[in-house]
Image (cartoon, rainbow, N blue to C red; front, side, top):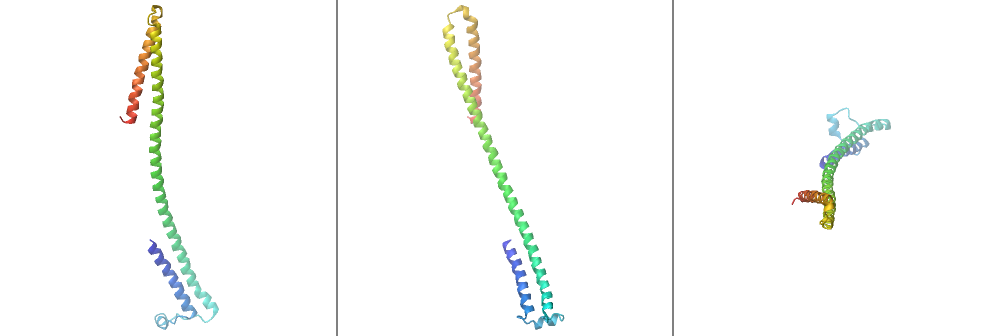
Length: 166
C-alpha cells in the first residue's frame, strides 16, 4: 500500500514538474509537437497562466487520491482498533467472572465460619442443659438447629470445592 502511495505521488509530481518545465521552456519537445501539432509554448503570460490550469487539475486529482488513501488507512486502523477493543472486552469479562467467583467463595467461607462457630456454641448450650429434664424442649430445639447448621455448612463446603474446581 505504501508503494502504491509513493508511486501515485511520484506520478503526479513528475507530471507537474515535467509540464512546468515544458511550459517555461526548459524542455524542448520538438518530437512531441510533431504528434500533437496544436501543442506550442505559450507566447504571453496570460497563456502561461492558462496553461497552469492543467497543473491545477493534476494537483486536484492528487488531493482526491490522497483523501481516498487517507480514508482507506482510517478504515484499516478502525478495524484494528475494534479488534483490540473486542479482545480487551473479552479479557475484562473473564476477569469479572473470576472476581465474581472469588467474591462468592469469600461470602461462602464467611458463612461457613459463622455456622461452624454457632454449632460450637450450640454444643456448649447442649452440654449445659443435658441433665435438666424441664429444659428438654430447648435441648431438642438446639439439637435440630445444630443439625441444620452442620448440613448447611456441609453444602457450603461442597459449593466452595465446586467453585475452586476440586
